Image (cartoon, rainbow, N blue to C red):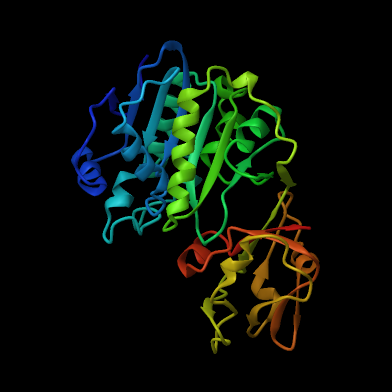
Length: 340
């Protein structure tokens, strides 16, 4: 099969540290492990964001075990340039380029778009039974999975690694949307797994479980159902309004449209009750925020409200991906929310 990116087949264990190993390879690459049944293939993708290294760390450690999977296993290490940009593992994408995980839809006419198109081509060439895309959450919090549709196969997969599956109808150009725009992969189950915070050792263990279990399972169709999986449907993205500023502090930042609590990511677990103060709003009040659904309808007032310059939850909410990184808040979103 013809693939676009370099392929390392059954590489020997590498005894360098992760950074040295990554630098020696220089750019995006596939690691392909020969399986007992090479007529079938499973795919893992990692490091689409350079500041989300848990999948890479787990891979480097796992390869030292010289694993022999049941099927061919193809692992993509994607955004090497962003990961190596100093300081190591701090850049989501290369400065001046687009977020790679927003480039899996046309146009493909820049560096990130061309890489996303090559990755799509290669995944189609592998004709995989499934794809699991490993990420770290942008704030502290438990692992969870994200998919673009309800599918028993995706729910069985998600339930092996986490307790919560988010089904989103947003179309942002992420890798998990490939089946929606690339007909050869229309029936391929693709799951994003947010392993937890990038600095959390437990996130590396979640990623490690993906490699071990995908290598060990003889038949994905035989995986049992997961009745205790918590499935949340169609979250809303809470974003900054255009030109609104963001800060994270323990008191309001003067002249800033939105100041969130310095530990807003503590709300990434469980249910946040109504009337919980999340921070402060500057001039313009709630108009500094927006939460349009996939149809473009503004719904921020259903989730949040302002009283005396403070920002409160209007109703019980399940928050996730709440970040304390102002750059991510500006370029992506502050958090996702689902009414509890």
